[in-house]
Amino acid sequence: MPLYQVNNRLAGTQQNLSTSFKSIVILKAATATLKRGKLMELAFGADGAPNATDCQIVYDVSRQTADGTATAATPTPKDPADVAAGTVAAVNATAEGTITAASSLWAKALNQRASQIWYARDEANALIWPATNLAGLAVRALSPTYAAPVLVETVHLE
Amino acid sequence: MRNPGGYSVITDPVRGVKEEDTFTCQHCGKVVFVKPLCDPADMGGRCTCCDSLICKDCVGKGCDHLEKKLARMEALRSYGV
Image 1 (cartoon, rainbow over the protein chains, first blue to last red):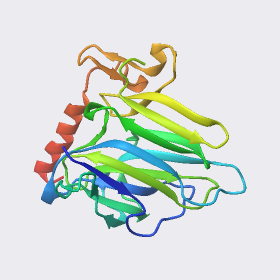
Image 2 (tube, one colour):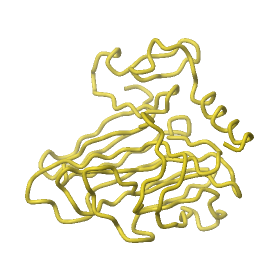
Image 3 (spheres, each protein chain N blue to C red):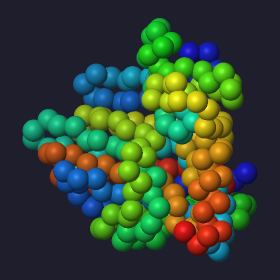
């Protein structure tokens, strides 16, 4: 099963963080190519100069059920011989989509100078989204003090 | 832990590198970070119905496997929801 990579430097303009969550990378199913997706790898960290006041950045992965406003990004196949992704990706949201309440699958607070990478060992431990139009996962971030962009990279399998 | 479901590395310029095993709750799909040598009760539990690791929030709530939840979400699409 092919792997695809998406990051928020692929398209659009990186958005500065604020005190409310901003969706950085959104992966969702689309009616034309309906299939489940499995998030296997997640990496993120600050993509700007650290704030003079030490602070945290909170990262979150939650379920999304409807679109907001974001820039479409084409997932890049890890193997160039693989077909184009059926999953639709969007990055650098300027308006949030509909996030299911209490649906956080991942929440981590890191120092603004820290970065993290996570791998799922197998498909059973991946973060899975259903084969339903516009349903997917939104990787989000907020910070009370750090007001610059973050870089989020996802690798998913479908 | 033996047979972790995932692996996390946090790199901090002050504190260095922190590595943690993880697993994904098979009921709600949440990623659980496992502290080395922690009490197993602190990291969640094992569902005796589906025989899989679950998070603390899902312990004691019966078995509602993630696959069943996904199937319900996908079933809604036939109603145009």
